[in-house]
Length: 165
Image 1 (cartoon, rainbow, N blue to C red):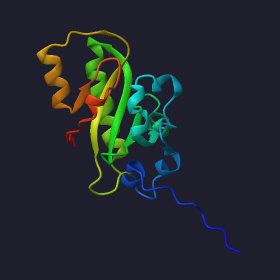
Image 2: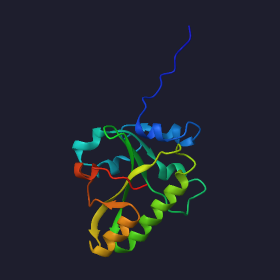
Image 3: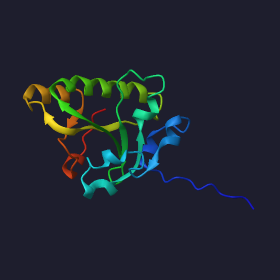
Image 4: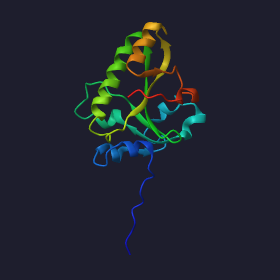
C-alpha cells in the first residue's frame, strides 16, 4: 500500500516561495517560526490570523553573518498576503538600520519568491521602549522605504494592508 504524503495547505508564505527554495523547508505553521519572546509583540487577538511563518534572519545568516537581516515573514490567513515583521530597538539611530535590513531582505528574497510574489507590508515593532522622535522626517523616511513603525505591539489596525512592493 502506498503512503500518501500529507501536503501542506496552500498558506500565503508557502504560495509565495518557490518550490525549489531552501526556505520552503523552513516555513512553519502558524507562528511556529517566531521566537517565543517575539510572539508577545503581536496582540493576542491577531495571533491566530497568521497561517504560516519563516525566520528569514536565521535562514539567511550563513554567509551573511555580518550583514543586516530582517527577522520574519508571516502569512496572513484572511488577507492571503505575506508581511515582514522586525522586532528591533526603536532609537533614532536605528531608522537607517531598519531601512538597510529591509533592503537586504528584498535582495535575499529575490531568488526565493515566485514571480509576482511580494511582501505586502514591512512592520517594525519596538523591542523595548521607544527612544526616537516621531517626527515628520522620520515618518517620511520610513514611508519612502515601505516600513511601518507600529510602536510596541502589532495591533489589528496595523493589518489593513497596502502594497509596499
